[in-house]
Length: 296
Image: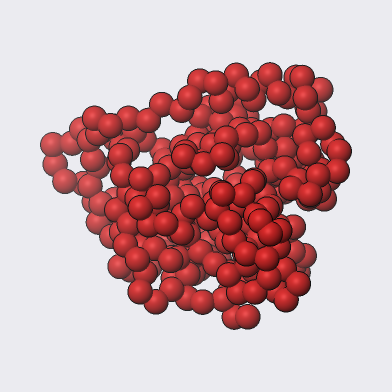
């Protein structure tokens, strides 16, 4: 049964000016996202050029493996009908289904067979609604959680561990350069997201939390700016504005102490939904000399 909530560019002859209009368990918060009818934009900064020019499709193109869709369909039918999409982070072991129910607890310590498992599985925040799973349908912020299970468990970060421990490969700048994109496959489309920030943060990030599927324009602008400030890397070629949709991959980490002394720390990778076919084979990545640190 599949009854759960489911959540190039043009060639131009003249220069055109364009106004370029976010694991562990989700923490409770009283700061619900607000709505706004008045469109706003992020103020121009070093990472957003208010003047942009339509660019030609590049020769380098990405084709998401066809087996991602095939495995999504097969595993939902044969293993678990809570599966809503397939996530692949190239050159990691993150190439697997993502489940979703009406809460964030069901798979916190359960595998795809709904049996107890310390590592759990990958799960999408229950508030994210993929709808038909197309670019137009997915939420402003699609949030996926997974555990960081290394060796020893809960003591230190281990990028060779299982589930979202693999995200820690992004601590290697050469890995970050070689892997600009992550893929999210739904029933109806292969969605390609381009990484733009890699951060360490508190579970309850301030001034705006990263755990909501939608935001007011002003809050979204604050979130994106804060994420950029926290990122251990700068991605100067990736322009992100409030008109973009993002993917948030969140896990626990142990940079600031082990689980017993600090279970409030998170490692999060953010990527923006690519709308066209202007891809790059490698990412332009620079070390951020002074990222905003968590307040532990």
